[in-house]
Amino acid sequence: MNTKILLVEDDSDFGMILKQYLELEDFEVVWFKNPEDVVTVLASDFPYQFGILDIMMPKMDGFSLAKVILKQKPQFPLLFLTAKNQKIDRLTGLKIGADDYLAKPCDPEELILRIKNILKRTTAHSPDLQQKIGDYILDSDKLLLIHPKGNIRLTIREKDLLIYLLQHNNQMIKRDAILDNLWETNDYFTGRSLDVFISKLRKYLNHDPTIKILSVRGIGFEINFPER
Image (cartoon, rainbow, N blue to C red; front, side, top):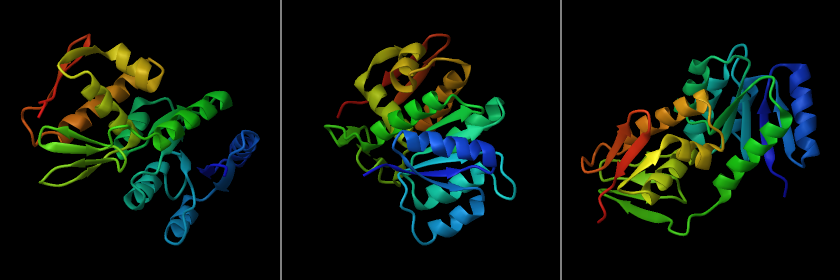
């Protein structure tokens, strides 16, 4: 069965180009020009496996729509499209829970590659589905960080980063190594994205003071998780 993609783009010309290109790659695409129509569909039936959202849209922007979708579908993979190169847009999207972003006009081949990489991470199952992390349990299959004080729903990117850190426990990891392995690219914006995700993981794990994710200025991070 072909992956069914939700495309939300108010620009008719750009939306049509994207839809046609994605369909050439054997994706099934349902294109919405009005994000409010997506909210209506979400309340009844939502048969999509992936979402591509434009940020700048009238009435309801992509960020607002993403919050509504992720509230009901926390594991739904999302990629943002933005016509601006301002870092605030990109970082805001990642904080909301998006898996990736691209600036318009984007290279269609790069878009396809990013979609496939995200879907690969979405459908991949870790051989160890539950891992003990200090006072926490990471359930990779359900994207849950479980703690007696409350569970935290992770995005796929957050889960992948946390697993990578666990695999390098008690080591100093270079920023470039993380970006090359998880983002498969290394530029200013992906570097800032990494900082956002590290900050979020620190916040999620703050109930156990024995867990340390230390920044080594100009180099990377030193990781210390208790082995219990």
